[in-house]
Amino acid sequence: MNTQNFVTPALIVVSVGAGISLAHANEPTRLEPGFRAVTEVAHIYYNFASGERVVTLARDGQTAPADTGESVSLWSTQGEIPACAADAGYNTAFFFGFDDPGGTSLSTAVELLQWGDLEKDTVVDCISVNWVTSHADTDTDSDSIGDGVEELAAQWRVWDADNGREINNSTRLPVFDVLLFNLPGNIAGPGVNAGYTLNIDLVDVFSGTDLSFEIGDSDGDCQTAAFCNSAVDYDSDGMPDGPIAGPGADRDFDGFPDSDLDGDGLFDWAWSVRFYQPGTGNDFDSDGDSGISGGMDSDTIGVTFGYPIGFEPTGGDGWGIDSGISDAATGIEDAFALYLDGTHQGNFWFGGFQCPDAQNQYNPLTSFSFQLWGPGDRGCDADFNGDGQLNFFDVSAFIQDYNAGGDYNGDGTSNFFDVSLFIQEFNGGCP
Image (cartoon, rainbow, N blue to C red; front, side, top):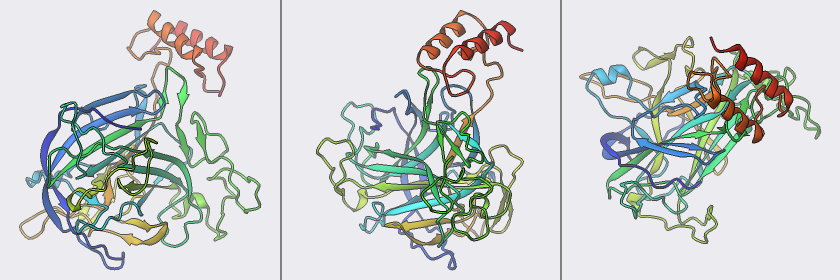
């Protein structure tokens, strides 16, 4: 995917981590902020299935569902400022740079991983990610947006059965893996970072193309998702024994189900991100050019700090999650894991959340902005185009979708039963 040709940016000033020295989780390290102007460039909507791309100004609908209009937020940490910080006059955000500003490039070997909890059998049809970078970019079409840095890439992955285990991660299985290359970068000059957010939509309702996935399959049925870990080899005999969240899944034989390693009744999952620098030999777009590695100031790339939806300060450095909120980031901890060349380097944090006062500076959570979206209820399925009316345009949209292989009744096939159900619900009208 080559994300190019965006829209005019808006400038804000953001406090960032500069020269961060990580310590093992037993030795908490506070974020030591530096200050740098960050061009909060754009929010990008991209549909993997259809190729549709829509770009809006920064903070203009940065959390938007899939274009079907049916998605709902399932789990969310967003790169926004908690209310107490905003009330104190802070209008800054934080990001974690994967690269040492001293010039040592780490991102080609480092993967950041965070974990959380969800209900079993959760279907995801869209994810929201972000990056912040100082890599110099061009703007050949004068639209104030970076054209794309040759071979600057990022890989986001979602994992089944993982709660951030430091040593034993044998239960971890990938369920979603996407690599984005030629990411847009910074055109504002040295000393400035560019920030982007991206919604990756996995479903195109009109073509019937579906790349959605199910987290925590418990019954071997991916439901409406295109794929899931529905056939896992529990005993390593080369034969599938059942779904990843099945009652017998204990692949490390520790007596604890792989699906709930922390015993809270929810399914354990994780997400990770890894960046690939230009000039390190990668040619993801197969054009014979692996890019040119920039200088010290151009090497920075990272992800935005956020705070969990459902966040509840508990005083001091403490915080909790209100699980009563539908998309609360349940299960997330004030920590993250780092892997270097695939080897676990430990779990780290940045000192916990603390609102600013006369004695203390603002210290962010060690949670990073990431969001899962899933299919919601249209309320009236026969209103196929979602305009609130039943008429010829719904029939036309249904026929177009059906001819492209659409599955209206969700049984995995496109046939007479889909037509029959649509006609029945169309004739029945909407509430």
